[in-house]
Amino acid sequence: MGGVEDDNEPATKRMKLSSAALRGLSNGSSCREPASGSCIDLMARPLPSEGGDEIFCSKGVNRRVEFVRIIAEALYSLGYEKSGARLEQESGISLHSAEVNQLMQQIVDGLWDESVDTLQKIGIPEESVIKFASFLLLEQKFLELLDQGKIMDALKTLRAQITPLQIKDSRVRELSSYICSPSLGAPVGSHGKNSGDICRAKSRTKLLEELQNLLPPAVMIPERRLEYLVEQALVLQGAACFFHNSVDKEMSLYSDHQCGKDQLPSQTLQILQAHTDEVWFLQFSHNGRYLASSSSDRTTIIWEVDESGSFSLKHKLAGHQKPISYVSWSHDDRQLLTCGVEENVRRWDVSSGECLHVYEKTGHGIISCGWLPSGNSIFYGVNDRSICMCDLDGKELECWKGPRTLKISDLEITNDGRQIISICKETAILLLDREARAERFIEESQAITSFTLSKDNKFLLVNLLNQEIHLWSIQGDPRIIAKYKGHKRTRFVIRSCFGGLNQAFLASGSEDSLVYVWHKGTGDLVDALPGHSGAINCVSWNPKNHHMLASASDDRTIRIWGLNGLCTGHKSGQSNGIHICNGCT
Image 1 (spheres, rainbow, N blue to C red):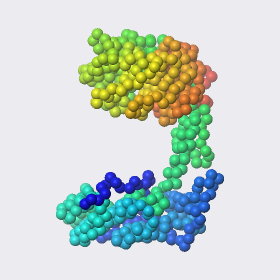
Image 2 (cartoon, helix red, strand yellow):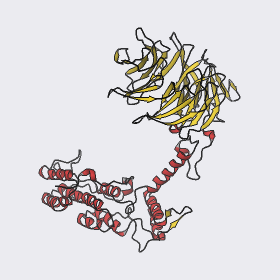
Image 3 (cartoon, rainbow, N blue to C red):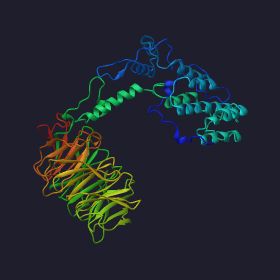
Image 4 (cartoon, rainbow, N blue to C red):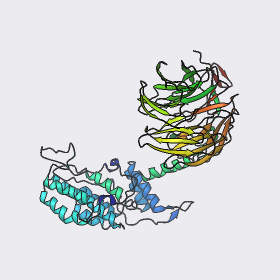
């Protein structure tokens, strides 16, 4: 027909009208009789005049008419009809114009030709919006006529009113097919009281929702606009707060939000002392209820976190013949992988502590490991610089040969299971798309010692030999977006992590026995936490408790950091408010 196709439909507004706000309207869903009723509770009362559109407030950005209309809309949406009407009456400012009120009532009463005429009078500048709104009204007329069995009237509407609009050609063809085949276009469960009755028309309430989403906001204010503006203000205040690390429900409308430094973990609440040698690695489970730590004493310990935030030893896993350099939680946190240094990978049941399987590569040592998100396969890096995938029984499914990994290497798999990330040479990280068989690289000028993938898989935190940490965006072409300095690294592998609310902070171990914390967005050093007496090899931030951080050290201990003044609730074994746990039961 030469008309505009569906994908050229005008952009709709962000907020949609909720059906609750239209509860005073009849739904018009009868198959035989068009619905009718009053929309007095939805519409503003027509008034003789509106207040001036002057600017007010200290910043000079609020217009009085807009402000009053938005408040009135909020009152009506909250169910305060009398208060909303009183505000309109006292201010002289209508929520909707008389023409909009008339349009809405005509829709409720099913006066479709009259509603199309009124639509032309409400002052919409965009002709395309008027056309699409007219299409919605006439489509509803067509479908209701069809549902009433008035086939010829429906056909006349299609030919004389809908088709001349020259838009939504594919939908017009679909409507035409309903004339030829009455059973087409009927949704499941749409039969009326009689077996032959079919209802294709949407409710008139739904039609009003669609119109409100289509028409300019100055004509029909988006539903719950004030609620959205207030929510947006709180979100922006949180984003602007340098130390923001509290959940949104703790923010108040009564005052501007500003977190203090006390919202970040900075005090040792518990010291875990069950390892007999240096603690090299640790990682919280995805649900935050467990912490796994591995050591050069060739054991891995699963610590359980109770509701008060206190840690207790759940299992001490033994069986490796070499120090354990890496652990990885399954996505459901029911199983744990542990990797000995150039040895093997063991899979453990978290509940019982039983070793379920040992994975080995004949003639080679394994140096890292990770889970496929489905939980039915694992990955591991091998000291011949390859990466292999096998099922839970150890059957090798795939292997990527060549310079895919190094002797000391981290290994990450994205949440969709598509990309494998590994250090492929001293100054480069490989991002391997295993489905597309495509490779991308992160190139650094210094040797890479470790890396960490963000929870949303958008960023990579890369530790370098020159005592810098680089933040890379890995969406599209990898690019560096921030650098962090301050920690010390001369000899050992030091690991960092993302953490805090929305992972807005970074933490890192250091060889000077301090835990370093930075603001991810600004790169500013927030704190350096003393307490350990040896190099700190690894840190892990609890993904479910933004106020809990763990650090592993060569001093054979793990420190649990929390908020100042917070107590874990233990009365025994404490010194200066610090609870000591040696793993004894």
